[in-house]
Amino acid sequence: MDGFDRIWSTLSETLERDGDSGIARPDFLRGMTAAFVTGDQYDPVFRPATVAVAELCDGDDDGEIGPGEFRTMLCAFGVAYDDVDEAFDRLDRSGRGTLTVDELVVAAADYYRGDDPNAAGNWLFGPL
Image (cartoon, rainbow, N blue to C red; front, top):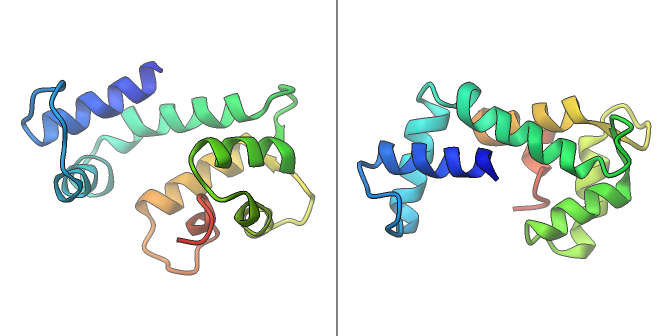
């Protein structure tokens, strides 16, 4: 929760807003880009939150995220149940049938900061 609070605080500060007020979609996109994509706040703020979510996804704490654990995470983020399998398969570049916490963190960085339209990380939240 602290990680998400830090993301919100950083986003609010970037937009020079009160942290209690709402943010419209265009401002959200502008703020996220300014803080975490082109700005310098990804590693100190966003990455730790990503690690925490990936570790939370690893329900049995074995360092690997199986399809069921991945499904739980993506469904919690609102991804359609039927889209999860393809997303998992695209992220599982090694074909092992599991993702490591580190692989999920790298996929998040690809998704949020990458500029390669074919990067596997673009499937982090299914087909968008």
